[in-house]
Image 1: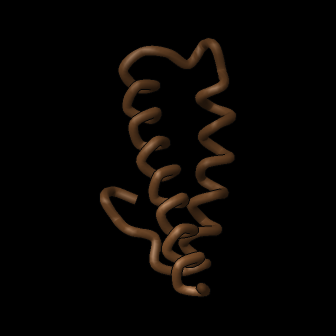
Image 2: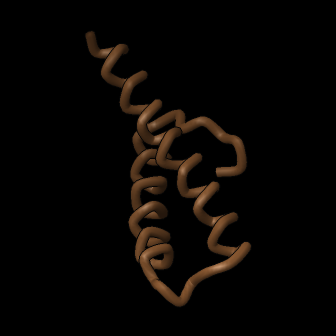
Length: 62
């Protein structure tokens, strides 16, 4: 995602799939350290972008 905004349903669906995949990795108690911290920051960013896309989508429909 690297700073990109979600613009359409395809990107939204791909982002959700990425979040599900990475959530499994983040849930692993053996996955720790700087790599986990970096992934967590990216995960939080993508989750925020998914939510913002849904808000924009809902606003556009009202």
